[in-house]
Length: 96
Image (cartoon, rainbow, N blue to C red; front, side):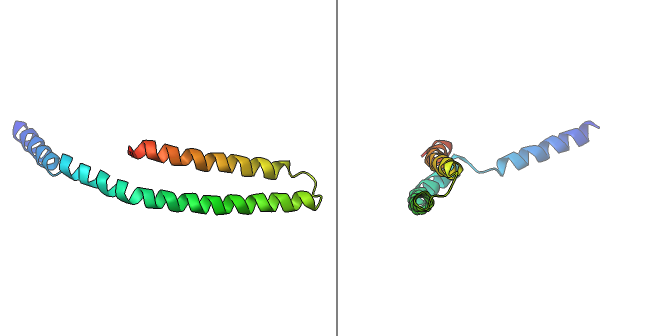
């Protein structure tokens, strides 16, 4: 029984040596930080275009006299807040 337990512990130790080290983790963070800003900028451009589209839609409905545009305005406003906060959250999450 002790022999099986010793072999099992040895196999666990071998698996632990196969994990990536600090150098690999720093390289992964560097790769992520180099591509994150271009993806973040692209996301901001897309968010801006969609935000303008929503604002124009709401303005058009308002000028046409559509009743109850309050829900559209609230949805547009909270979507803009969500997009702004999600960028900050992702930057904090990845440590960039």
